[in-house]
Amino acid sequence: MYNHKNMNWPQALLPKMGDPTKMGYLMKFSGLGLEGGFKPITAFTPFTQEPTSGPAKEGIGDMSSDPGVKKIDCLGVIADFEWGGGAGDPIKLTVYTNSSNVTQMEDKKTKGTLKPEVETLAWWIIDYTNAAGWYEVSYPKEPELVKGKILTTDGNIALKTFAEKIELEGRGETTLIRGFSITVIPTMLELNAMHYANEPNHKGAAGWGVKLSAD
Image 1 (tube, rainbow, N blue to C red):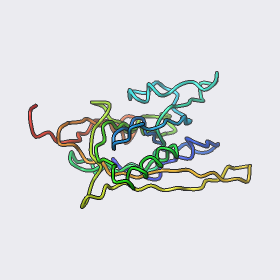
Image 2 (image 1 turned 180 degrees about the horizontal axis):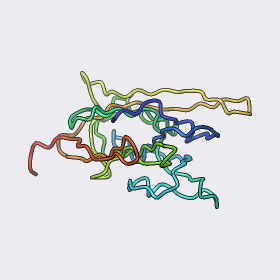
Image 3 (image 1 turned 90 degrees about the horizontal axis):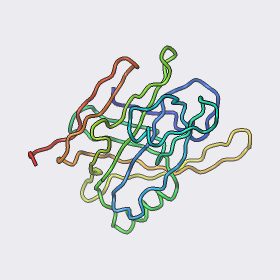
Image 4 (image 1 turned 135 degrees about the horizontal axis):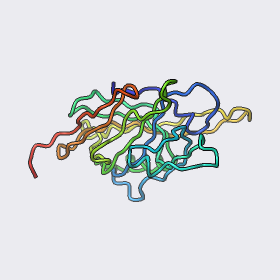
């Protein structure tokens, strides 16, 4: 229900004709002691309705006079999203993003100044059925921006970075795409409601986070 692996992230960056499949976008992300923040990217999205997710509604826009072509300003495209569904379960994300964002995280980790705190996090995952078209699968509902911490074991922050070459079809060229994987756990200070949908008409909300005081 909450695991979305091998999403069609290339379609958000280098779209081509084909069967529509699940896609995900990193809408908001800050923290880790990154002073300059994350640099945004502009990607494609086939979602033509008005999103319910606030950050997605803010980022989506017309690309041309054709209503079937949209762009979305975001911080990355998601390849994998994993969550066990429990309030205390970690959320695992694999994201392709601007290469400068990855370099900034790598520099911080090398210098030992990378911090585990995630100050804001929001994602937006969509899927398609022939009967209903595109619909929203997963996003933080309330609050729209969640907080957390990157899982740390023996002082080692669970952040992995990588690079992947993808082919530019029809040009005989490749380009290098950078990305990162993180595992985020709740802060123990906040409760969150996450929207989910297995099908367009089968949707609800699930809780994430633990709050041990009334303050």
